[in-house]
Length: 336
Ligand SMILES: Nc1ncnc2c1ncn2[C@@H]1O[C@H](COP(=O)(O)OP(=O)(O)OP(=O)(O)O)[C@@H](O)[C@H]1O
Ligand SMILES: [Mg+2]
View 1: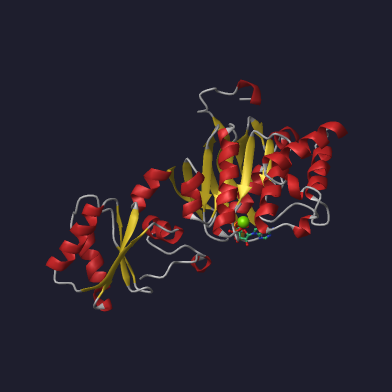
View 2: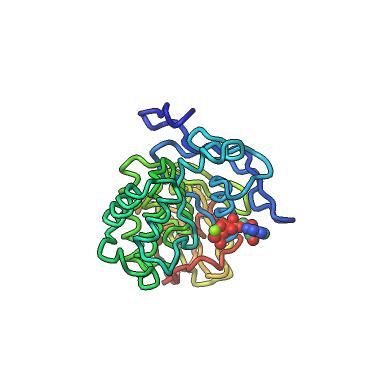
């Protein structure tokens, strides 16, 4: 496939990765990754610190050469056609790539020139992108004076200068406050509505839910799950029911009772001894009632109960039965 024979149905893969491997010394940062991003859709790549997300993005941007496997982006092979590939992609890295000493406008103009735009076109494009990302008023100010959200918007604008057909966003909102995060999400949605294909890495289940059509979960360089957002949520449960028993010592016994109950729509139950709670993925209120009823009928005492949207930690727990490699990275909300 070349960028010229795009499937108007938007169903052909814009990114196709097969068996991608990348070592750093003894570390297998990517250990045989397979994934696909359909044209015009957003793939969320979800994983904890050190999972291999940035390594993947760097391989797909030609910044790193993989040790094995293949990756084709917009019809171009990352190893054999790096120059063509670079012209069709945009990248917003995990760490800001703009020059702090320059103004927003100067940054965008410079990138336009680096992309071989003639001066007048580079000027026009810089103006256009600043306007698009609501930065016109701050255009002439040095980036040092920008807020975190303004910087991220400038980063996004910078990655869009060359009108990429495939955009990589590496943890675009990590470290941003909720309001700023929402602003950035809105910008990303707008870019997707304009037909862009996006590969987005994130540590946040909520971000994946907000933006992604499909998810690939990676851990230690390996894909551990993939599918539609709803499909994955169904595996984890739309929400997680958290039950704190009166007697923490009975947690394992409770988990077993729920798992072996055969209750409709209950995919699993896991004891989390650290937090002293039983976690049960549920899809509907009726299952909440059923689980509580079951525990009561077995004579288990319940001290506290609540439901939570699944966090990334809980996704890992549900999929692998163990905690994410670097679970300390996830700010877990306290159990009520
Ligand atoms: N240039 C490098 N040299 C050596 N090891 C590296 C290098 N880059 C990454 N690694 C290692 O590869 C693994 C994957 O790192 P990577 O940066 O891809 O993870 P990540 O999923 O992006 O994590 P984070 O969420 O913290 O950004 C880690 O064990 C990391 O220490
Ligand atoms: Mg990273």
